[in-house]
Length: 150
Image 1 (cartoon, rainbow, N blue to C red):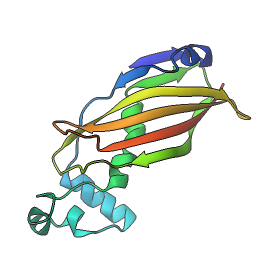
Image 2: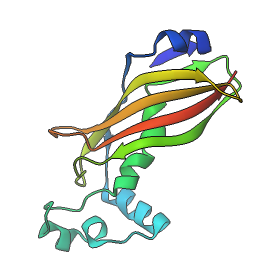
Image 3: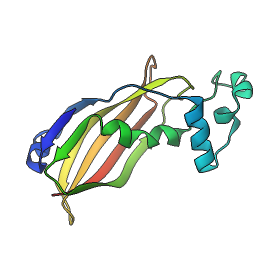
């Protein structure tokens, strides 16, 4: 994990790849819990028998389940110390280039793309790429925005 001591250190890292998170295995229990929480019970996610005959050969994680892993995985890559708080501000471009079959291992790569002053402190922009172990395309690519308050 990269630890930045304050905004000045973080600003010096703009344009660099900060590293990768640990691998995380997607389980059917996790997919089912996400379906229950969101009401998205589409068979490609929650019906292993039907999904085995479908286009992916097994159930697959919801795209938004994959996206929801971004905070957990990103926190394994970097942190900024010496600030009062950081909050999620949103996302810009978001894509799901490939599915995440149940049992897949995923991890996040994080690139710091910008640190700019704003009314509360600083807006921090990162490009987060969720890759699947053995996959030829990313599972998710998102430009994330956070606000860090010194």
